[in-house]
Image (tube, rainbow, N blue to C red):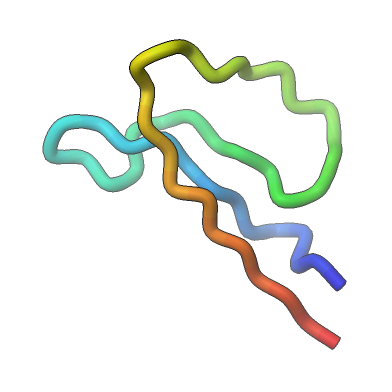
Amino acid sequence: KSIRNLNGHSIGSYQIHAGKSVPIVKGGEQTKMEEGEFYAIETFGST
């Protein structure tokens, strides 16, 4: 079972959290990943 309130995120120069979020579960997010951007995809699970 996914933990709904945790997200992956974009990574920038000298910034671990650079502003864009990547939801773990499908929702109404409209942000698009662009070429050349880097992301940390953090997956978490629970039972």
